[in-house]
Image (cartoon, rainbow, N blue to C red; front, side, top):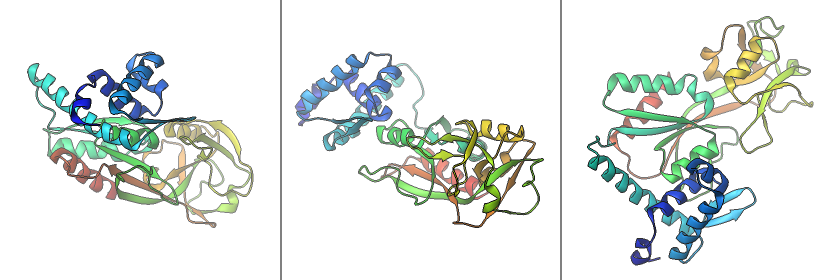
Length: 305
């Protein structure tokens, strides 16, 4: 695709393409934009006609960027960024040079993200942090679509990269903690010492499906029995409040122990394979702006604390 061809692409098509790249499906992009799915399909088709090659690979579970699509997306992000900056300047609004966009997986909002944002507000009040919560697949697509600058992700063994796209994301482990179990304060396992993994057999669990997987998040991994799921919930705080109400047990990283509600005790588990969880900071490779560097630094300090 040459420069003349790219000049024939409409801004609408570029915005639609960026939304599809971030959302992962034409249906989700259409809903986010307020378009019909056929309108989104037409915009993608117009982009592919100009490119002379497919920019998306259609799959049963959604879409994936082709090699050409990756190139077009990178250029589209730059073009749309310049257009948006020009619009702000013409409207007399301040530039976004002091803004950093952060995505985070749900449990990072309990302690890590608020602590880091509060520190940055104290030390660099001119920097604005805009945050959004999301699952790992959603946040990774947002990074690649250029709609967020940094993402705080959760990672489980064997700690693979969050996607296989190129260029590879820059990943930095902020913290690695053991997995623990939250039990009601009046539960027999709520004593002061660690519990053995065998003590978890026959318990009732509060769990929810992880994004895009069949794994139950909230059940101790590797139990040698089919777990009894008493309640299902995606939100970690909902799970912990159900624990406080005596409805069952759930798992959580040790880093969340200070955020549990009253009526919950967090216990260490011994026996069986070591269960670890990582908090990872992800971004696209390349130079970063000063606000992004500043936020990365306070996230490191907050995770270490």
